[in-house]
Length: 498
Image (cartoon, rainbow, N blue to C red):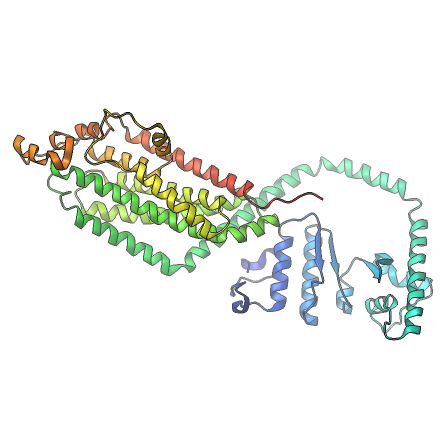
């Protein structure tokens, strides 16, 4: 369907869903007109339609040809259609036509208004009460049932064909100078039209972006059930995590809560990342086939599509992260502010969505996207998780693993949250020296820390800065979006010039 007014395509505001085979709410004529509009809205250099009226009744056939004629003239797109026995009203919509006989013999090509006079001149006058289109088709029809009549038909066609060739020779004898004049006129007007074409191109880009953005919003609105399930999941999971890690209390900051704080923040990152990535992979990959077909028709560019998805999908996914962070903050004794939790979880979710875009852009099907996305997510999750018992500084880090960590949104988000949580924190003394020794097997080096800064040192984040980590996470998001654009732009079907 289309928006209000149909943008000049002859459609009212959509009240029926297109597609779905037998479940479609559109008639045959409406589907035909929709397919014509979809092709012409892409600003093709030329529009070709093979029997666009076949299978339609007289009224619907007229509407289809009328739409082609209107859009072709409004958008200055040369349009060529094959029509069999057009009715009188359709005949009058044509500007020029080519009359082809069996064997590809051309018997006429030129202005429709000049055709009747031309055929009258060579001895085949169209009766006044006859549709010219039907008369011309009868002239090039061969009767295959009557041998004698068929022989006469072939002779007539040969005559019409040779006479047309002769007329073309005499007609174009003086066309060389006319062509030179037209070329000069086109050259003079080229510079004058550059600004207009640029403004028109910008306007068309904004229109295509707006249409894609509205389509994505409608898809989200239609999935009300999924939205409600995600909202419920965000709230329930925050409550579940709060009930599991009870040592993260409002009234006291205890050393025994260190591992629980790290685990609580970590599980929140993993949870939101999985939800965002899986949802994006499923949606993005399911649209891949449609997007490829539309890009084959040059309906829009890869960048226009990606930007529309970013502005339509990311705010929605980020809103669930905001809800999760707000509930988690209210139900637990996390030291980080509400704003810090919201900002970090929100940016990490957006980064996970952009990762889903990147994977989906190179996957041909939803199954391929899932098969590729799940192991990628597991790897990025494993390398991104912080060991709550501390880091062994005696072991040299694995360079490959350190490189992979740079591409993990979970890693950056956990480090940002843990840094914000423990930086400057002081613990209330809940046990003596011997109590700390008892906790040593369970907590490792963290059992002996005295404040939050020592916790960060033990976790290998002694020099970490929250703002710098968030900047790195933002850069990672931008990198994933760039990869998404490259995947869409160069991962589609390739066509060979002929």
